[in-house]
Image (tube, rainbow, N blue to C red; front, side):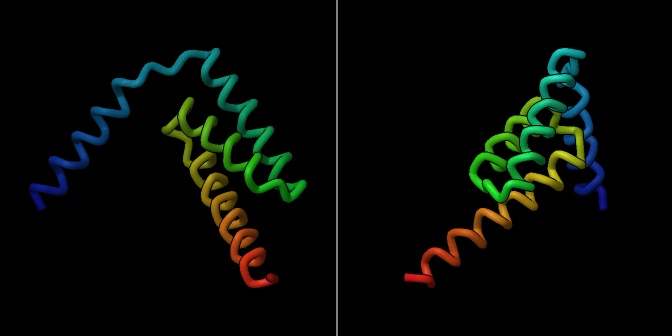
Length: 86
């Protein structure tokens, strides 16, 4: 129990040390919007790149992480289908 509390406090402290500016927040939002557009257009590689950028700029956003997961899933599915369609 104590170990988990220590790990949690270190994670929280690491997140707290990342300064969030309005510029990086706006840039993260723009990358997220680009990612959603690419995801809707079924451009998995573009979506992954955009969501990775959004997460890098704002690692505290669960929404950005969620959509990055969706994009990874679609990218994997796309590659899986390409292998078995040969």
